[in-house]
Length: 163
Image 1 (tube, one colour):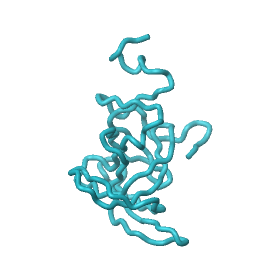
Image 2: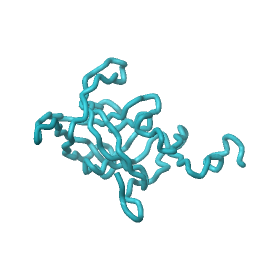
Image 3: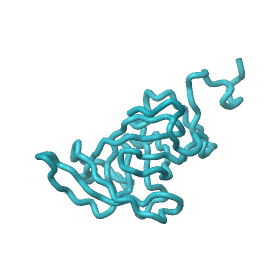
């Protein structure tokens, strides 16, 4: 067995090492590539969303919004999603603010699962998406704070897709 600090070789085989920042996809929102910061100090995921507009669809609460996706936020993706909650979530200054929370799929490398994400104005932040600890827990992931983009580009796994 490799010693502590020797890198990924010392991790159990079923654990995947990811960097502190990764390219991810949000397939249910139609976003194929967005830069995410993995922030285990944050509880929830937060997605930079602008022009957030609530509406009703078949008696359910929904939101439409736009997301800045791709390298350096060069393109806008228009999205719609069902609202699962409206929560008080502390912003980066520690001040609670009410946010819409949606459920969407997350693709990291070839892996895909569902996450809850709050919609927030992150225009002044360096990342369009923050993945808090509830987004990555129980996924057999370990975050290497000294590395970036270890998962590769988000893509469909061979043999199908899930979530």
